[in-house]
Length: 107
Image 1 (tube, helix red, strand yellow):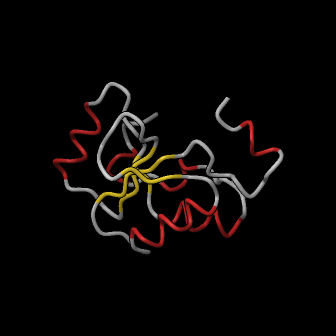
Image 2: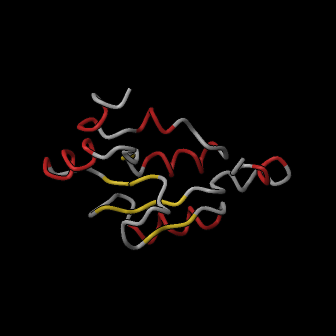
């Protein structure tokens, strides 16, 4: 139901997507924010229930364990997901970009 608007505006493929950027990323947070907002996505500064994805280059073991224990863990995805989606001009499957540490338990 969140993606109603995208049929009319195919360039708004990040509609309904709110990411939390965790630590250092490549490209940096400012670039990711610009890419997201250009296509109707958004960035949260702090962990809230609004966030739909976490973008991280890598995660500490402690963080990984916290995310795995959550009842509804938020997918932790590499920044490439955003970059490649923008290049492809559509929302790519985030599961291809999951951080390896978190991947094994999220089936």
